[in-house]
Length: 217
Image 1: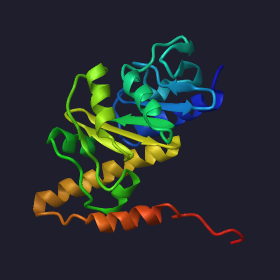
Image 2: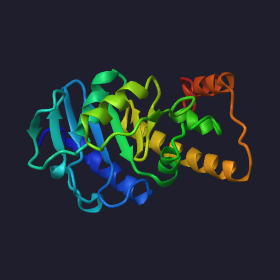
Image 3: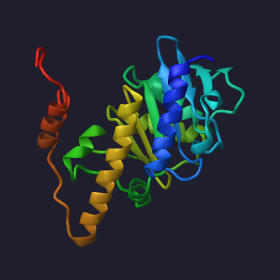
């Protein structure tokens, strides 16, 4: 099978997405691109994550032609291909319907920097205008909205997160969900204090080296 390693990772993270409460049933989708081979591994449509196997993962070229796998790809394949072709740093796309992020999106709000952990997605998370799932319009809206960040809320729909690795995209989705919960709870009892752009610039700079040790340590 083509992209065996990528298939295994997509299945693994699909199950993590389900068990982490970021989706229900077979909702949402995940892709992982191998840009050296110009191929994309993406979840199939309509197959539950807890029964998905690496052989179920669909392999496409970056023009959208199916080159391996006998299942139909996710209905949201257009924006997955669009995103990996949009920016050289986008290797993985994670689309969730997580509760709090989706609630913010259904209110028609962007997600501001109410907590510094939003830095996993950027200094804020913009809102992509609504369009029918799987449509060309939705894909175009996402590509026009995401900018240089790692996530965008989808109005009345959910969340899309991207990253240079699948783990980075997944972490962005998790952190946006966490910050969305904080934001909604804070607004329920008062007016949240939002971090300044300067404060977030400092956070984003520190994130570049967070968790890494100097050579020899």
